[in-house]
Image 1 (cartoon, rainbow, N blue to C red):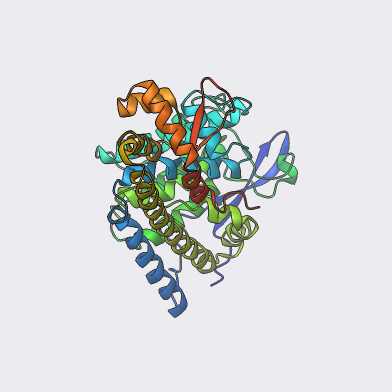
Image 2: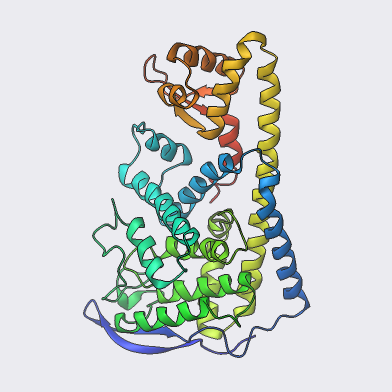
Length: 386
């Protein structure tokens, strides 16, 4: 449905230029979303897929094993959309203080994303509502170190920003003037908590566009906007764990994503955006469930191979468990986790390398670092696509 523009334009001055900044109308859209048979079906399929995703704990012996690396995969992908070059292995190496040759600003930025998500989840689980205050807190963590730390972490912007182009005058989009940010975000907050609002998946799709349109911070808006989807669904109880991340889908469909955001603003075509969003939810949920199943099978098959090692299997299995928990790790870290002696850990790890389960990454004799290569391969599938 084409409703016409979904906001108004205000003339403002930015960078010494007079530009037209877009101020969005409050949500929900008017007239209301038109759910024809096709969109209703997509909503039903997305709900079904998210339900299966939420039951992922039944597939894995320990959901936290999957969550640890899956959250970090999302951090890498969401940050790559913003231009960082770090990989999942880079981040995991950084977390054990072993990241030679990695662009430090990039990996710090990705690490901040993990911390921001964990902060948001902790606050939600402590009963704090998903609110502008919490969004600002999460942003403060996101920009606490490295690039962007000088761009007012945790504060809504007090100056004009723009998207695309080298200056405001040739930008592809100019968000609301600074004086309109607080009011726009307050209206978004009210929509998030409207008891008469749409189903939570629809609410998340609408809220994401609205947040990206307001662009309330000087930096980090894209990452916060993507986090908002997961935090909203966790806060509403749709997901018990933070397992839904659309960054890979959005990265793979980047041009269409930006075109649809623009179409919502120019023509009010929320329905085409919602169809795209719900397809992403379904595809992403199904992908996460498939990855969990493959990891379960990998863990089982490797356990059986190790068990066949006879009397050496006991220590090997404990080291294998440590690799499942931290798929990039060092021998001292494994020794602390397993409480085995360093020589025992070293011998067991060498045997896992011989079996093709572990892989040594450094080529050094001392301070060696190992990865659970097959685990990382499953998680990384699709991540390097254009």
